[in-house]
Structures are given as C-alpha cells and as structure tokens.
Length: 300
Image (cartoon, helix red, strand yellow):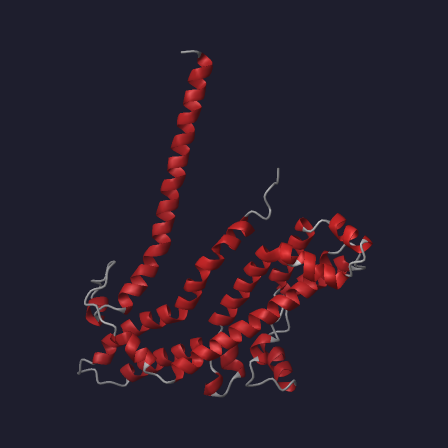
C-alpha cells in the first residue's frame, strides 16, 4: 500500500475515534444534566417515605399525585399563575422594545459620542445604585403594588443591550443602510422594515432571557408588593413551602407527623410547577439559540 494511502487511512481512523469520543462525552454530559431533572420529577410523584429513605433512584416509587393536588388546592395558585404570565408577557415585551431602541442607535457609526455612551452604560454593569435607593425611587414614583415596580427598574439589561448592539453591528451592513437612505427610506422605516426582519434570532434570544428572569423573579415582588393578590407564582409557591415547614416544626416530637413526609414531596412538586412553563417554551425557541451560538463564527 502506498505511503500516501496509508496516511489517508490513518487520518480517517483518527477522525472516527475523535468523533466517537466527542459523542461519548456529549452523551455523558446529557445524562449528567437530565438525571437531576428526572429525579425531581420522580420525587414529586413518589411516596414521601420512600423519598426520605432514599429509595427513589430514577423511576417513581409508590406513584401518587397527592402533592400536586395539595399545591393546586391553594386558591392563590391560579391567580398567581395569571399574574406571572402577565408580568412576564408585558415585562418581556417592554424589555425587548426598549433594548432594541437603545441598541440600534448605538450600533450606528454616525451616532456622535456612541463610545462614551457605551462606556457609561457598561459602567452600570459593575456599579449600581443599590437596593435601598432603588426602593426609594420606586416608592417616590408611586409604583408600589403595581407591576411597573418590578418591570421599570430593570427595563434594560446592560448585557442584553451589548449583545444586541453587537449583533446589529456585525449583521446589518452599513452599505444596506446607505442604499436605503438614498432610496428615501427614513431611519424609523429602515429599523422596522429592514433591521427587525433580519434580527429575528437576537430578538428571540433576548426575549427568552428576559422572560426567564421575569418568570423566576420573587425578590422584587416581595420587596415592592404588600398585597397578596399581586404576588406572582414564585412567591406563592415559596409561601406554601414555608408554611408547610412551619406547620411541621409546630408538631410534637413524639408523634410521627404525616406532614413531615409530605413536605419533601411538596418541595419537588413546587419545583416542577415553577419550571414547567419555561421547559415547554424552550423547544420552540431552541433553533434560535443554535443560530445564536454561530453569531461569532467565521463566515466563508
């Protein structure tokens, strides 16, 4: 066999081994990431005594949906679900609009002082006013017990602003803008009819980032809301868990409390309930995240 053919065969074999190793590594990573999720789901529908004894290794033991029935028996759950969806929808929409309106001008080379503005904006990533000044501002503006209290203070994320600006700079050619202006297209029309249709990937990505942040928020609502009717899902689930723990601490040490065993299952049920909406949404936007990974790739 000629030397050249031997080298080619060896090269192919090495590539095959490398690809196989990468696949094995990815499978191991997937198992490590999926296993905790399966355990949480299994624990939420397993017998509480089996959970405490560590018998739940993968599949449920003593299948029972009682924990979910107890969580949803709370009348505040349905109302808090509506609140969370409202805060997430309105907040994410406003976040995306404001981020685009800020990122697009900063991506334009003809904006005077844009580097100085970006330095000032980036400065806020490391130094902020703090919790107490923010609370005083929200209260002085009369936003307490309204959804604007948790939306307006963080209406623009500096990180999302930077990646959106970078996307506009790298993917919207300046020649396209010059051609549009020559044809009589205004800046507003260019943004709405040219930039936004070409920026679906980054819009979906930052919208998902903002939505997850709003859905998981509980510290802001606790700080700004004094009415239980305004609480989102995360706060209500936290209250249910804390009340269950408090009730268990009040029981006698000599009596085996059934609630003690139910607490463990309720913990896992609350985690599943709080995580499920985002888990359902993610597969529909996964393709945009895959495109986002390639944003910085070298194009041929």
